[in-house]
Length: 396
Ligand code: PMP
Image 1 (tube, protein in one colour):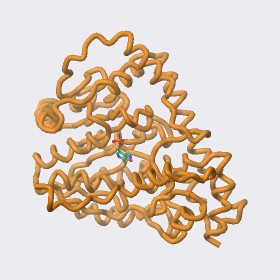
Image 2 (image 1 turned 45 degrees about the vertical axis):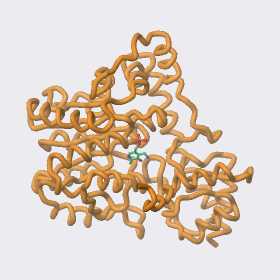
Image 3 (image 1 turned 30 degrees about the vertical axis):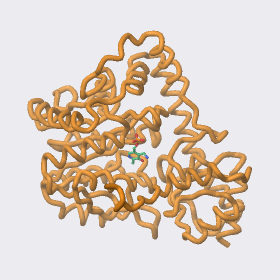
Image 4 (image 1 turned 90 degrees about the horizontal axis):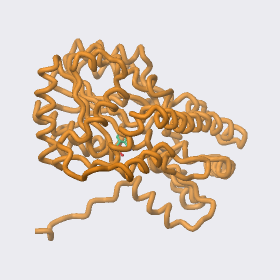
């Protein structure tokens, strides 16, 4: 059975993570993997999470099965976090199920889409998070790219985005990142979200939003403004969300899928199909992370502690963006990196060539993904000079 198998190459980012761990250089810098890091380079458990876990330890009553949709308190809290006081919530047009992480949510969405229309093409930004392509392919769906990020200007190619989306037919899916676009850091502004909404209405394709970084860009509500705008104007939509980054619950695997239907009855039918998909993949999601998020969001005290911690993470990331630009200028790194300060979330492309990326790893133990995507949160006061000096030497 197994003899004819060929090895699957390691995910390049996870491979770099292993190399980084094995590197003995005390000056090593990891800008590759997509987790938030504090000034000390750590990814600690949030205090709000610790408190909710303590509460759970003392109050959990049962380990009996939860059901396919997971924790109903969590589902309600996530719906509110994503949509706020939105009409789709008030009118009962949105239904949310807990999933194992954002990845689990996307995988459920992919199977759900395949049941709606097995020949649907899923249109993703060029570039996008690499796993998007694997996830939709795994459900037998074809993935197409639409132009999005412009490496010449380090901004958007929005004219070309519009041109391509204007040809996407009804029955296809267009995947947009809610905020903090991974890997480019370039987000749509509200006017551009409106343009996409207009095209979606005109063409009749369905929008899928991936919201993996709510609260990491400009703020919890600001980061959901695009998806809320769309939800007001289109009849059907899917939102896949993750609590990995904003609650720091990466390994607890907690996320959600929200399905908006034309009316409550149609939303209910669509939701039952999604639950059927869940039943056949993992039956039901794990309880821990959902209980933690639900406990935080149902307590005023823990919510305000979480808001403080999230603000701290966001402020640090945004501060680092300007800090890095200034540091590169001070150290004479050739090129204009001003774009870094204008982008959102943890990621930006440096736009440097593969040879320089390899030299940075080999000679300086600085780990950057081959596409030149960096996680800005990997920079801190103690490694910024080393990083900028190395870049200046390698790029000059
Ligand atoms: N979507 C995007 C754009 C992401 O960057 C990530 C995480 N890297 C995810 C989804 C999935 O996150 P999770 O760890 O919750 O599966």
